[in-house]
Length: 371
Image (tube, rainbow, N blue to C red):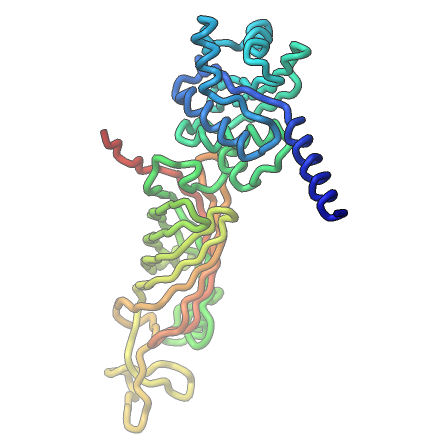
């Protein structure tokens, strides 16, 4: 008997709670100052979000249509407090959700308000400034509804739609399939191992550099493929010229592929590196000098023949594997990459490690519009 009484009491309390839920109607949103979006889409999305929030009893849209036809009243374009109070009394609802979308330069203001029919005043208001991305009006509506009712928004989504310096993704570039980033690069490379000794040596075959390192100057050609996830795919080609400070020209080109995190800008890439340098074949004598065929005293008997860099040698191309990691910093339409790279030793080479930076300008490839 007690169990039955408890069930009846709980059901009664639950019924009373549901019965006390206040009602809200969604009439119209003013998009006259931003006609790139459909007001009906904003209305429907607001209705869906109110159902999701489940805080109010939603006035059915068919009831709204019935009252409009019965009283011969056009409910569209009703934004003033006098009009909202009149319509609210006809609908016998507690609140009306309304708002406006306005173009403000390069931004769009989403302002939503909850009108209290009984007092004739706005109970609550929320306004967000978004980037001008009409394709994301549905997402912006949800974010503003959440703000109005004190529901936390996803911080990453909010940044993508409000901050122009955010990293590119399908969220803030819905009409873009790829981005071209081109710009100059500056690097500094340090050479290690045996090659470092040859570069700084003043002996025959040495390069007499003041340090086993060199600056490099070049240009970056990068293409980024964006999507809705956390990572961008990228491919890039970077031709460079080094050794200018030593009166030499050391050309190189790197072709890399990798990925970049669209939240943080951290990136990783790997690919082949082709470098041109003076190389010679021979053996190393007791003075650490490379003896070449034709040199005085050249005797290769019992010697280990090698090929290494030598200022007396012929220009040749050598290949290596470049591994790079870094971060791209954004400022408006410009990127400022900062990367650390390493090239493991290959035949006749030593470790090469360095840092590279520069800047590039974002150039978007827009998706074709299909009618």
